[in-house]
Length: 385
Image (cartoon, rainbow, N blue to C red; front, side, top):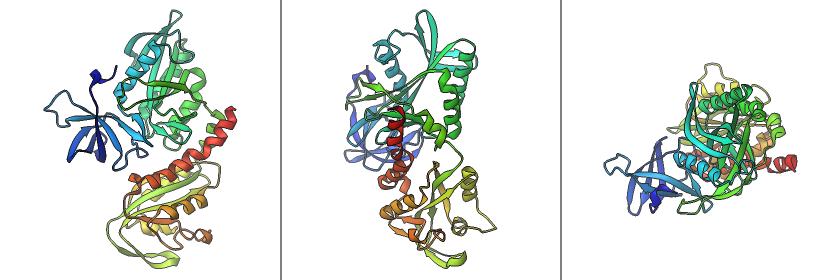
């Protein structure tokens, strides 16, 4: 079934200049590859991580290789989103999706009004429109989608629900390429609008989140199981409140006057600031992204001299700020003493320095994963247990 049975070529990830291009080391050469997955995949793309490449059919193409998959903890993960629909069709044709065993695939890429959906199925003589999503964001036991804001994905969810209201059967198939997953949630940390649309629309859809696994040939998937959906947890946690990481870059060594701290020396490099907002979390993050004339917090002084690379909210009703700071101090190369810690001097600092961009470092992204996903494992399993 897979890629004309081409033998895939192992390589090592180097960098990703843009969403659709990846650099990889193959033997002694650095090669340019097409990345057929627009997701951020910060939790997967680390320097040296094993990739699986396929030679492009057109030898004159600017990107002579395609990325098919990647390894996480030694486990092959499919990245090719175009192949994802082939996988969905294979699973349905072979009656491997619980609850959809009697479905028949009628057509792919079907247009309804102004929208196009991945599959038209038929069950008991009735049409059944299905959208397929590829999930590559995993934790220890959880899977989440999307890993970047998706207006298109939200629109599809709402259109499928509207079609249901008109008497048309509609559904969603989320393929989680990680057989260790036990539960699924929309990623409300990254895209709260999609998550809220999913929460509202899910009861009107015949939807499944299904795990599967691959070997290194990526020929046929090994079916897994349906994933639990802890909807109460989603309703409780998807609020405009919580804690956050802000990732910044300082291009040169700087001595900066920081309010009550006075003049502080900041080595050039990357920084992660930890904060919290009991309400209006998104407004707080937008504030941190802007340079300011009026200073209020320590971070305002530093922000005016640094570039914001990313803001990573952890939406929660729990108080995690201090735990996050204490985890970061273990991973950081240095910290700025007393910075942002006026109300919690026992933390020592809430600004942590890194030599390399932490967004590309497993140590930092593991911390993000722990607070966004892994801490939910017990609650998710308990809710559905």
